Length: 121
Image (tube, rainbow, N blue to C red; front, side):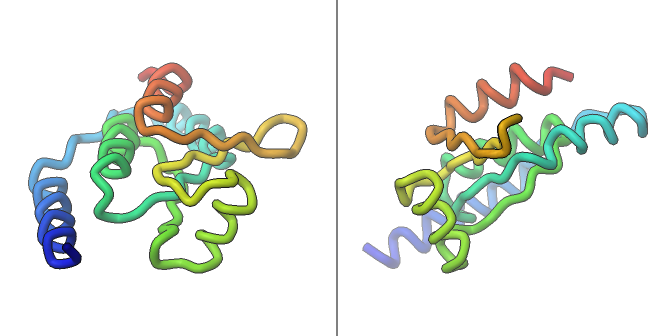
């Protein structure tokens, strides 16, 4: 089973690199404003997870510079995800709220909808 996962993960990453979407071109000021808004977002993910790839492709298509943390390879990221979100499940978007806390959003479809609504180009 491990070999099958490795093969599928490798294929997902290869196809993602071959068919990477192009990002939106914005003015320098507009991109700086978007970057300031994305500073409060962190995506917890696994590199070869197909749902995580789906979210990262939307981020690239919209030219969103959101910090990513690999919960599979980083013990500290895994612990942050468990402590904050309560589940070791990816993708998970950590959204810093105005009160100084954080909201944790799971499910790729919810994350993609959130990003599309908040950062429509």
